[in-house]
Amino acid sequence: MSLTLSDVEKIARLSRLSLTEAEKAATLDKLNGIFAMVEQMQSVNTDGIEPMTHPHELALRLRADQVTETDHAAEYQAVAPEVHNRLYIVPQVIEE
Image 1 (cartoon, one colour):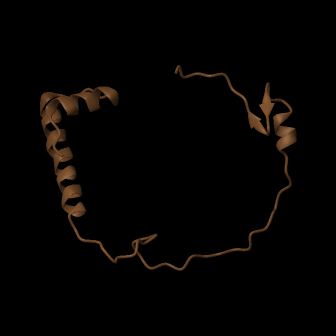
Image 2: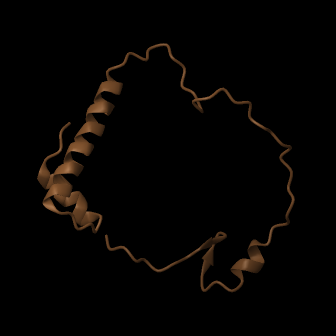
């Protein structure tokens, strides 16, 4: 996958960034370099390799799962304008 200068301009506009022509060209080179590296990594055969949760071998510190606080939901939701099934009801802000 390769980006074009118009892609960078669109990304900059969506990000509310004002870039000079030199910055756009440099950003294009950097982003294309990142995509090239991702494509190179995707070509590596990973059959039979188990996914890791962390790049370093770590022992997870586990603790007892204990309730330390009481349920205050009713108190917190008592001041809410509208609640249904313990969920806050809010006005729709995004049009469909």
